[in-house]
Amino acid sequence: MSGEGASDTLERFFTGLSEYVFHSQLGVVDTQLVDYVSDLLVRFSRVDTMHRVRQLDGRRATDVVCMIAEAEQRLGEAKREVHRHIGDYTLFWTGVYPESLRELQASDKSDQFISYCAQGKRAYRIASDIAADGRHVSSDLLSRLSVHFEMCAYGLREIRREWERRDTDGSSDVPFLLM
Image (tube, rainbow, N blue to C red; front, side, top):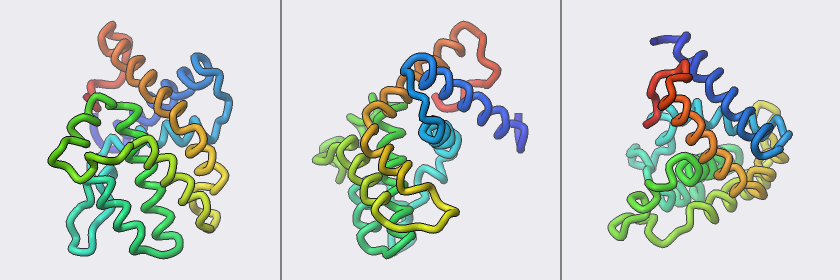
């Protein structure tokens, strides 16, 4: 599977799982929020998207602490987008791979003293307070992501459980992609 077909299949897979988990299991009917979570999974299936924030020297900012420092050096919509990315990054790891947080926050890492959950909520809230044009994610949605961060992380964990279940029993039409 390659090219646009793989991307479309992956998008349909994550959209279906997101709707199933959020609508059926969690009773969440906020379609914008569910669509955002589904899109997050598709975007973060690419490592280059996950580490898109660059430091001034051009290196990728791979720690939340570095991303926060980069956000503080930016203005307007650029600052908003880095904070949104921090929210996305922390939501992804907190929700999809919480077992990886121990490594991401190891004693030799700059993220050792921060809470991904608290920083994610904070980042979405800050992003929601910065005005943006209509091409960007709405401030209202970013605010809801901040308020419902834990529920979204739980939903992402349930999505992972469901895709693993489907992979195990052979009912998935998408090959092993994010494991």
